[in-house]
Image (tube, rainbow, N blue to C red; front, top):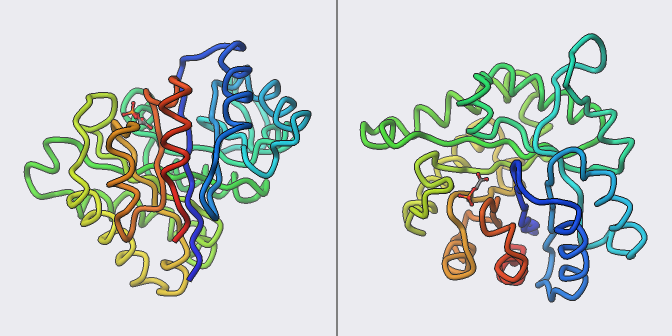
Length: 256
Ligand code: PGA
């Protein structure tokens, strides 16, 4: 079964217009393997510039634009929020939802994440749903319980059938920005659990969902991680700000 690989750059609150330019020119020359999509998620002020550069450089088939966050609401008195429809108008195709930094610093709950996923799908964008356990949760054997509790509200809200249009990023919180990557065996074991969890609801759908790994992925560890059976690419933070590293990571991904 063909499952596409995705390499997504999460710039977080970093980067500038110059990085948009550099990223475009470097990614234009990157050699990708079959069935790979690259998604670049800058801060929202840069989305429009990135989208228009992607278009004017004829890179729409290679580079997709993604947002780092989105509102669960369609419109209204929500100062500072951005709706999925607004993103769609800017040719944004993906939206990261439920990143651990949003769950931790902005107290986003899994129910809110489920509402956001629904709003994103309604506007025709693809959500990249982030899930992951903390160090303490892994240490106390709660990883699977935590991941299941993060996923179930989304399944309940949108129905498992809609997961054919969803991407999941497994990001152990203790591996984000710390330089501590999960070993490829540990990552594979957890990705397998996630796929099996989805398969309990619908096996055919579960086999189609791209599962990305995130947490200190770099040019040296990406190949081994991407070679794992249930790992379909990565969500890259720090290394996505270094164009040379990021293009290497993109070249290492391959559809399964
Ligand atoms: P990192 O971030 O690659 O810097 O660990 C990943 C992420 O937070 O998406």
